[in-house]
Length: 45
Image (cartoon, one colour):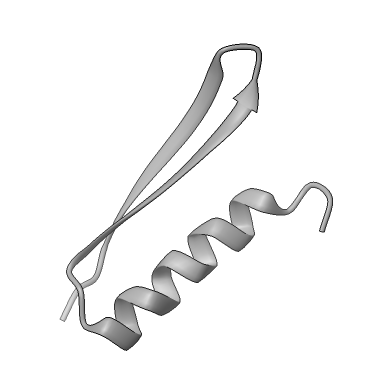
């Protein structure tokens, strides 16, 4: 959905971490004009 790309990326990353049993996940997005954002997730437990 428009305006929810970041939520979709982080939610998908978190779900895959749980399914695969990973410890870290990285979600990145290009927002145009040379800008970008990145988030590192750590799964506890």
